[in-house]
Image 1 (tube, rainbow, N blue to C red):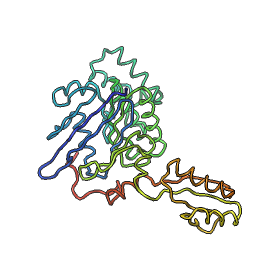
Image 2: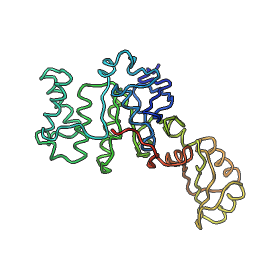
Image 3: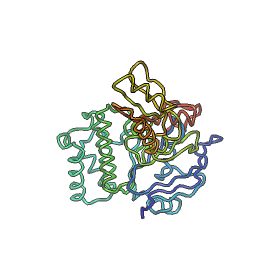
Image 4: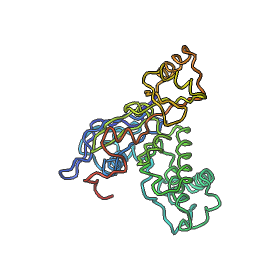
Length: 319
């Protein structure tokens, strides 16, 4: 039976008369990637700050790594690691010195601290830069070092608050690989991001947060099935086959001027099988087939009326 890493019931938080979180519920299993999506000001960072003990909730019940956040905050902090939107590294120190400093904060003896630092520098491809000041690092290198510092204490749960903001595509993919490696090792990752492709690529479960409320949650595939727009694309070698398929599939429509049809679909296997069975019974040959479904931006737009890059009028308090 899968254990629960984080459980949140009826979490609420307000700043003045503005409700930032309005009764959200979350269940996050161990060893998975959970992604919280939402526009600027939706409450993502506030959620991370509360779950990582940096900010107090107004109300709600929260259990992190088996510990009640309200009564055992020190035990929660001992079980988690946090990487914020901005790297928390000392640019005057070298990569190794930053890691050893973090080891001191975790109260590791110097031998153990050096051992873990060496392992992380190698794992994050920072060995060649280990003795150089962080001020000489690229943005991607700095972010990798920041993640390494988070992992030095071997946390069971990692909070990554928009960790790839401002990184180039290659550096983003490097961070993605780090996240995947952690999950293989049994770590739970709580990820906030405005990059929908990032959530689609990494997350086992996604929650869409808008104006302090969870408007939908589920796997990426489940969320994409919530909105219309998916279709099966059928390619034909001859016009005769295209015409025959059009008669057999009453909901199909031409895709441009080519020998291609689109058939509306919910993306499920049963729908695909039905289309292929009907074509097979009518002996209509198909040259090629592909399944297309709405992306997460389509889902968010359909459910909230705006995209995740659209800022709401009232933003979260300054970070």
